[in-house]
Length: 324
Image (tube, rainbow, N blue to C red; front, side, top):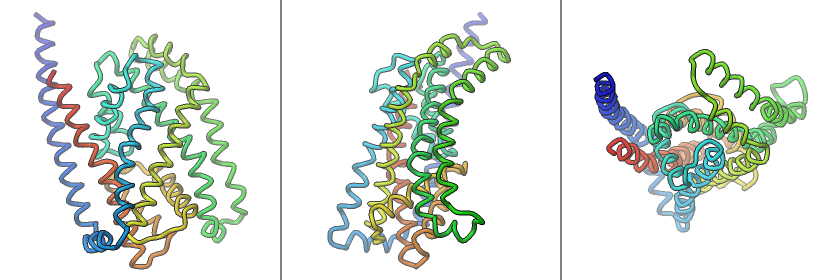
C-alpha cells in the first residue's frame, strides 16, 4: 500500500512539476522575445539584409548553430561514457533538452537541470558529474584561448590603469589551468566522499566512473571545448560583419573571446548577459552609433540563434520523456 501511494504521489508530483515547468519556460521565452524585440534595431536589421552580399554572413552564422551543439554533445558524450552506457543520439537529445532550461537560468545551471529531466533517477549522479566535468573543460578553452586574447586586446586599456607591466598577467591563465588540471579530480573525489558520509549516498559507481576519467580523456574533451568556443566566436564575428561592423579577423575574434571570458564569471541569465557583453564590445570596438547598433544587434541575434532556436525542440524532448 505504501509503495503504491508513493508511486501515485511521485507521478502526481512529476505531472504538476511539468506543468509548472511549462509555465516557467513559456514565460521565460515570452520575456526574452519581448526583450529581444525591444533591443534589436529592426531598421538596422532591415538595412543589413538590403545590403548586397550581407545574407551570406547571417546564413553562415545560422548553419553553424547545429555544429555548435553537436560539438558540445560530442564533448559531453566522451565524459558521460565513463559513467553511463548512453548512445550518442540520446546524449544529443539530452543536450538539446538542457538548452531549453538554460535560456531562463544563469550560465549552465539550467543546462544541467534539463539533462537531468530526460535521464532516469539512477542516472542522475553520472549525468551531473559528467556535466560538471564538461563545464570544467569549457574553462580549458577560456584560459587557453580567451585569456591570451583578452590580454592582447585589452593591453592598451590595462596599461593605463595598472601600476605594473601587462606582461605579468599573461601567465595567470595557464597557471590557473594547471592548478585545476592537477587539483580538480582529487577535490571532486573529496566532495563525493563528503556527500557519501553526510547524506548516506551510495556513490561506488560514481567513484569507479571517475577512475576512468584519465588525462587523455580530459584532453580530448578539452579539445572539443576549444573547437566549440572557436565556432561560437566565429558566429558572432560573422554577425558583426552582417550588421556592418567590419572588424579585422584576428583582432575581432580576440576581442570576442575576451568578452566571453569576462562574462563567464558573471552569473546572470543569458538575456541579461546581453547587456554586459554589449557594453564590453563598445569598450573594445568604439562607442560610435554605428558600432553600438551593430554590437547590440549581433549579440541579440546570436542569443536567438544559439539558445532560443534550439530550445524549442529541447523542451519538446523533455515533455516527450515525461509522457512515457
